[in-house]
Length: 126
Image (tube, rainbow, N blue to C red; front, side, top):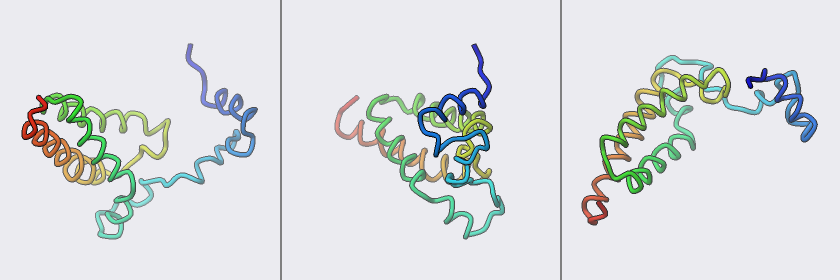
């Protein structure tokens, strides 16, 4: 059964009335990454926050669990697709194009997965 977001917010309001209201005041506390998507050094530095490190550590450790480069690379691309498809529900999933392609995929997911697969192969964990 599908519910509207307002129903969930009203239900959650009974548990924590200060955090979530019907007016979506919880969005003010989140950093929204789509405010300015111009490709400037300041924007790139703004996008390189703790989520960049979380992406890197996540895919490094995932390579120890999955141990298959094809599955890891498929999964991290699919993870970005999921972020794109959920950004209308979770506003902090909304990212600029360069954040998805350059920061997440090229600079964190791929190098972390490659290093993790190298470590798996080097230490014979296959």
